Amino acid sequence: MPEKELILNIPVTSDTKERIIKIIKEVIQNKSPQITIFCANPHSLVIAKYNGKFRSALKSADILLPDGAGIVIASKFLGGSIKEKIPGPDLFLELTRQLNNSEYNYFFLGSVPKTLKRIKQRLIEEFPLINCVGSYSPPFTPITEEENRKLIQLINKSKPDVLWVGMTAPKQEKWIWQNRSKLKVPVVAAIGAAFDFFAGTKRRAPEWLRKNNLEWLYRFIHEPARLWKRYLISTPLFLTLALFGKMLYWSNNKKNLRERNQCFRKFLVLFL
Image (cartoon, rainbow, N blue to C red; front, side, top):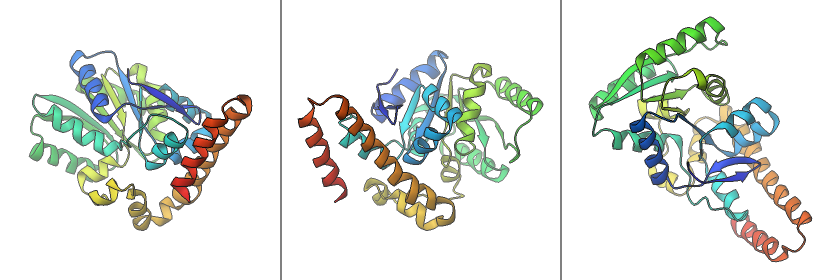
């Protein structure tokens, strides 16, 4: 399993994208043990701090991707080892490229029928060895026990190698956490917006913005009504909570004055 480090008391994966993909491919090829993959960004970690079920779901993940520049920044000034952000859409695309040398099966759970149809069409055109063995667009209302039972039967009957879930956080993570033991799938991954990006129903930020950690700004400009709380409230709160957590550690370990000074210098360089 990949290396992890604690950020806001949540174990976030600190390995490289290459190492993570290698682990996923080994699980798919061996058909066991099952792993779950979630994405962590400042907003999700702040929500998890006040939502017990979501927090438990994130902690249960075998791989929790550092999906956001804020996670990398926090790791840096806290003395962690996370060197790069690994967005869910990037992991999905790179894994699909590498698996496209043999036949593998995908199942897509989430989004709307139009998006799922476009995903299937793009797979056929660009990744012909990846089979979409099934998809399901869940209702916006809560799924009943009977609907959930039939859904799990549908997924298991399709025998996918990877179940991709895109129902937005925290709904997708909670669903996987509550149902993973019933799913006979080697890899179950919650990747949210990757469905829309891959289908082309939403435009992703240009690569130069992504490389300069400005994808959040592009998304905020295009969806301010939906994302303003995430970027204007959750991200500053996340960085404040991370710093306070480090200050508490220093107060209990007064000998670490040199580490404290180094951390504050990193903080000043990053934000001033």
